[in-house]
Length: 136
Image (cartoon, helix red, strand yellow):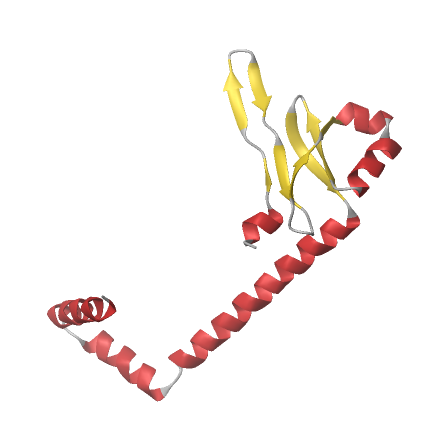
C-alpha cells in the first residue's frame, strides 16, 4: 500500500460560475478499504457533536466550512494506523539512508569520488556514456 494511499484524504475542488463544488472525499481505512467520506458542515458539527463523533468512530468525517473541506475527523484506530504507517516509512527511509552512507564510506567509493573530482569534463562524459550503455 503506497504512502499516499495510507495518508491521503483526497479532495478535488472545482470552480463553477456559482462557486466551488466539493467532490467526494475518499480515504483508505486501516483495513485497506477505499471508502467515501461523508461531509459535515462545521455548524452541524458544533450543534450535533455527539452524533458526528459516533459517525467518525465508524470511519471518517470531513468537516467543511462554506462547502470547502477544512479538517477530517477520523476514528482513533484509523489515526493509529496512519501514525504507525508514517513512522514505519520514516524508519525505512532512515535505514536506507544509513545503508547508502555506509556504501559511500568504503575505500573503493572514496577512490571513485576522488577520481571523479579530478577528472576532466571529457573523461566524465565518456564515463557517463559507458555507464548508460551498461544499464541497457
